[in-house]
Length: 465
View (tube, rainbow, N blue to C red):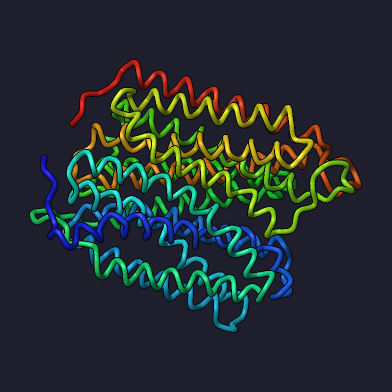
């Protein structure tokens, strides 16, 4: 199928607009990470409560993503994009205004909804750009949706140190307003002849299941202190997911085409995303936490929040480089093989961290290797899924992949916390240094599974749709 062209003047704006919007929503959603301590201090709440400024954004993003993906497949995609960005801007305003903590959480939830726009940006690129150009832009959108966290982290931390938590969230308000204006000027209407009704029942059941899954991933204390409750909620989540699948199979206009998700290429890609996401976020968590651990623990570097944020610069920089290189390499190497190679690179980052972390330079190298691997993996993933996906279903198919990725990231963060908690001795505030090695070995195992899954995909490479 050919792309639906836009005017030449609009074409010049379209590609940077798509990349800018994807970068903004990712960076704004990640603003909660470096500000948790500042929020706890400013609002006089516990660190556990402040953690919800990050968790609630991830939750709302996971719930909104499949719904927006379905809306993106219909005729009102432009309106859905503008309305979603308006919600994000309104949420950003709530985080800046001098309101109680509950309003801050509401604002962060609204900001998180923007995470669902990444798949829609891919749908626009596939519809309105020539095939080769569109594939390259889709890969880059996938990459910037990852490295956006590395861009937002140090900037937010610096603003928090200089002007407090409201100043840091003010950055979010400024860039989201710019993203809304950019979308209003640059995003074209969807091609004619499409229809997409949202399966409300399916959306509600999926939202409930995802809320439980991500809640359980984020609440590590629930597993350690109330194992029976946690296990019961996990069973409920599994049952809800099964009910959702039945609803989707019977629906005339399903939220997600479950039958298409069963395609070996799509199912394998989502499995690789899930397991790979666990490993990738695990290493990101380990390195940043290790860098901020004070010298008194016997290891670590005692970095401030801002300086620790700068440790993410190699992650973002090399991730972007990998994203730019991948479209060129794809002409010679199949996407599943690129996934496998990228997973091996991330595994190498784990090995480096496990073997050498006695100085900051070694951490920077490990972070750079991680970024390069994540960038390559993120850039190659859309090609595997979209090779067997109709153009009209681009947003919906990729939205599912991003939900899977979000769950994987959440579980990776939780896994890191559980391993480090298990390695913390009685009466000690910080885990033993060996606990980080144990966590790194678990990450190597996750990336080995990801590599094998990707190689299995390569052996049954599908024809291009």
